[in-house]
Length: 78
Image (cartoon, rainbow, N blue to C red):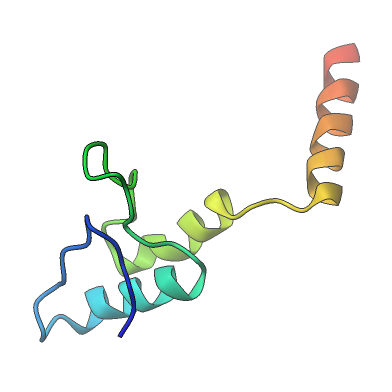
């Protein structure tokens, strides 16, 4: 059992793909917590969208953030 948050709505018991989506999201730190008034933000609707979502939403390392800043700086000078 896992605390998925106030805004979590469980899929149908038989919906294996949706449960796999929930499992992957939870394994990567995404839940459905909020204060109850504004929701947890957008989550992928389908299993095939999960990996792109995780890659876009994951917290970037210091090195990745620095490379992005350098890249943006170089592009702005061109």
